[in-house]
Figure (cartoon, rainbow over the protein chains, first blue to last red):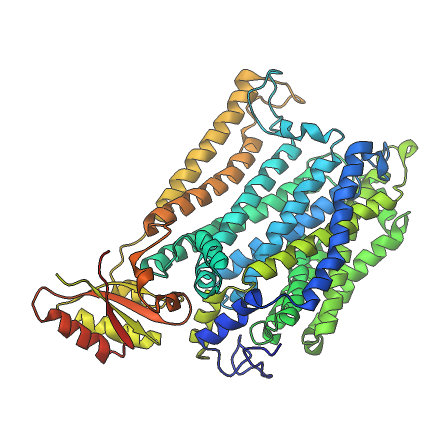
Length: 455
Length: 175
C-alpha cells in the first residue's frame, strides 16, 4: 500500500516528514488503515500471537488446578517469575501514561505521534500486570479479600501492608488510565464515525464518540480536562510504581530495605516503557505506513530519553552497591557480593550489559538514527529490565540472613510460560487495537501540522 | 424568524477572519466547529472559563477523605489490631490509599463535569443534518452565527460570511 503522506528525508518540518500534510491527508493516513481490508501481514501476526494467548490462558488454568507448586519457587525463594513479571509489566504499563502526561505538561508537540499507542500499551500492560499478583496467591479465589467490605468474618484489610497499597494503586491507576485514554480518543472517534462507510461502523463509532461535534466549547473543556488529568497523572504514576518499590523496600530483607527503591523503580519503569514504545513505534510505522508521521526525529528524541534513563539506572545500581558497602552491614555486603559472583552472576552481568553498557551506544547520532540498532537496543533494554526485576527477587531471597536456608530458584517450563505467553496476549490485544481505533491521535496531528506550517 | 447561519470554511484563517468581521457588526457568533482546537477561537467566542477543575478538586478531596475515614474506622474502632506496636491510627501510611483513589475520583468527576459542560453524550444533534457537516471532524471549519434583529440582517450576515471566504452558507432550522 502506498502511503498517503509521502515521506521525505531529511524531513522538511521538525516533526512531520512530508512536504505537505493537509488535514485530509493526515486523517486519511491514520484512519484509512482501519477501514481498509485486513491485510495478510495482520492475519499472520494474529495467527502467530494467538497460540501464545491461548497458552497463557491454558497456563492460568493449569495453575489454578495444580497450585503455585508448578513454578520453581520453594520455601526460601517464595517469590518468583509471577512477581517479577508483575513488576515488569506494570513498569511498561506506567510508561504510557507517564510519557503522555509529562510530554503534554511540558508542551512537547511531538507527543501527538506516539501518545495514543503508548497509552494503549499502558492499558494492556497494566491489565496483564494485574493478573500476576492474583495468580501468585496460593488461594486466588480469595483475591477479593483485599477489598474492604462488610463481611461475616468481621475482618478488614491490613492497611499497613504494602500489598494492600498495591491493590489500590493498580485499580486506581488502571481506571484512571482508561479515562485518560478515552478522553483524548473522543474527537478521533467522531472522525471515525464521520468517515465510516458502513452503518455498523457509523453506529458503533457514533455511540462511543458521544455526539462530539468539535465545538469551540468542547475543545476548550477538553483541553482543561486533559491537562488537569495529565497534571494528576504524573504524581499518580510515580506513586504507583513507588508503591511497587515499597513492596520490597518496606520489608527487612538485605538488598530490599533501601530508600532508593521507589525513585529507582519509577525511572526503571519509564526506561523499560520507553524502550517498549520505541518497539511499538517501529512496528506501527512500518505496519501502517506512517513514515511521515512517526519520523526519525521522534526516534532521535526518544533515544535521548532512553539514554538519559540508562545513565540514571546505572547511577542507581552504583548507589545500591555503595550504600551496601558504606552501611557496613554484613548481610547487605554479602548480597552484593552474591550478585556479582554468586549463582545468578551471569544473569547479573547480562543485566548490566543490557541496561547500562549497551544503551551508551545512543551517544552516537548514527546509532540513534539507525532503526535496526534502535530495535535491538530496545529489546535488550526490556530483557535487561526483566532480569533486573527477577534478580531483585532471586538474589535477596536466595541469600537471606540465614545461610542454612539459602536455596536456588530453578526456572522451569511453567516459569517460562508465564514469561513468554503474556507477550502473545499483549501482541494480540495490540493487533486488535490497530484494527479498531486510530493508532495515532488525528486531531493532535492536524494541530501539529498547522503549527509546523505543513498544510 | 430566521434561523442562524452556518458557514463552512476550508481553512482556519478564513474562520478567524469571519470571527473578526462579525465582531465589528450587529451579528453574533454562536459557536465554531473545527477538526482540531484552533487558537483564538474560544477567546473570540467569549466562552466563559471552565469550572471543571473545581469539580475535580472537590470530588477528589471528598473521596480521599472518605477513604481515610474508612481506614481510620476499620483500623481504630472496628478491628483494632496491634501490628508490631504501631499506633492504631497509622495516619502516615493511611495517606497512600486516599491519594490513589482521590486522584482517580478527581479524574472521574472531571470526566462527568466535562460531559455536563459539553452537553454530551447525545446521540443526535440538529447540526448533523447540515450537508457536509461530517467534515467538521476532518478538515473543514464551521462557524455558527445568528443575525441581528433588523430585516435585512440575515442577508448582511450571509454577505459577511461569504466575504470572509465561506464555501457554503446554510440556514439552520430548528426541527
